[in-house]
Image (tube, rainbow, N blue to C red; front, side, top):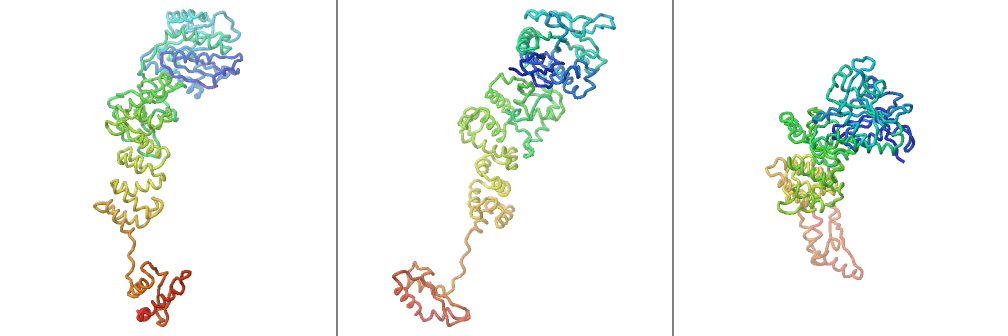
Length: 579
C-alpha cells in the first residue's frame, strides 16, 4: 500500500512557467484508505510537467484556510513556509522571461455533488457588481483552450457558478495574490495568470484514481508549459552546499576551519570584485536534485563570490540528475573546472577520491579515465596508478584533519607537491610529519639528498622523529644552521659532529705495559678478562690486584702464564709509584 505524502509544505523547483499550488492537501488517512489524495496527485503532476509546486500537507483547512491570504499574513511561520515560496518561484519564472501560469488546486467539499470532474474559477463575477465583483485572473480565451485540452483527455469540466465560493475573486483569495495592489502592493504583477481548479472529491479519494487523474492532466497541460532554456536565472537560496552529497562533484574545496587558506580567500575577493565590475562571465552548472532543490556541479567559488556580494539570483546551466550518469557528471565537472583555472594538487586528490568512491574505480582505472584531462604526470606519457596514489595520499592527510600547514602550503604553492607526496605523506605519525616539515624542510629547504642524510643522522638520536628533532643537541644545531650561509649543509655537519664517538683518553704507560705483557703471554686476541693488573689503591704501594680467566682443563697452564707475567721486575714498581 502507498503512503500519503509527509505532513509538511512541499516546495519543488521546476524548469517551466507552470506553478502548481495546493492550499488544502492534508490527509489523515493511511495509504490505500479513502481520504484526500489531492496533494499526491498534484506532486505527481508537477513531476511529470517539470513544474514548480508549493503543496501544503501540514495545516488542516479547519485550523487555517491557506486560500485566505489575510489569515496567512497574521502567521509569520505559515507566511514564510507557504506564501513566500510562491512569490520566489513566480519571480524565478519571470526572471527567465516567461509568463507564469499558476494553477491552484483544491478539493470540492463532500456535500457538493456535481457531474463535472473539474470546476474552474478565474475571478469571474458580474461587472460593476459589489456583491460579486469581476476580478479576472485569466483571459477567457486561455481558459477555453485549457478546458478543451482537458476534455480531450475525457475529463469533464465546467466554469464555477458566479454565486459559488469557487471563483477565486475575493480580494484576499490566493487566486488574487498578484492581482490586488491593496493587499500586497509589492507583490502586484499584472502579467501573472492564475486559475483556481476545484476537483471532485471522489477523484482524489484513492491513490490509484489520483494517479490516473495526474496522468491525464499532465497530457492536457503539457501544451501550456513553456520550458526554460538550459541557462536560466535561479534563486541563489535554492542551492544547497551543506551535505556531503551536495558537494559530491565539487573538488574546488569547500571551507574547512582546520585549514585557513583552503578557500584562497584572496581569490574569492578578487572573483567577487570581477563579478561586480564585469558581471558573471560563466554561468554556474547545477543539478536539480530529487527533492526539487539544486546542488552545484561546477562553479562553487563563483557561488561563494556571489553570496559575498549578496546577489539574490544567479545564472546557471541546470541539468536533471536523471539526465546523465555519475560518470558523465564527473567528466562535465572536470572539463568545466580545468578549462578556466588549473587545479591545485589537493583539489585533484579530492576529485580522484570522490570519483573513486562514487564510481568504484581503482587507481589504475582513475589514471586511464581522468589522467589526461587532469594534466598530471609526465608530458607525453600515460599517467600511472602510482601518480594517482600520490595525489590521493596527500588528500588523505586533509581528510583526516592532519598537518594543516602542509596542506595549506601545497595549495598555495609554497611546498613542492613531490616533497609532500613522496617524503611527507608516507610518514604515518602526524607529529613526525609536522615536526620534520616545520622545523627542517620549511625553514632550511634542503634538497632530497640532503634531507635523506639528515633523516639518517636523526635516526641515531631517538626512535621517533619528532622526539629526535626536539632533542636539545638537535635544537641547538638547528638554531646555528638557520643563521648559516648554507643551512642544510651546516645542520648535517653539526649532527655528524654530535654523532661521532668521543675519543678515548690517553692511555698511560702502565696500561700500555700491561697490554704488552698480556699480548706476549696470552696472545694478541686476549682481553682484559683474560689478564689484567691494576693497583689496588693509590696509597698502598705494597699491593696489586690481578684479574685473569681460567678455562676448564687449562688451570695449571694459565697459572704458569700469570706467574711469568708477574715476574716482570718493573711492573710492581710502575703500578704502585705515586702519580
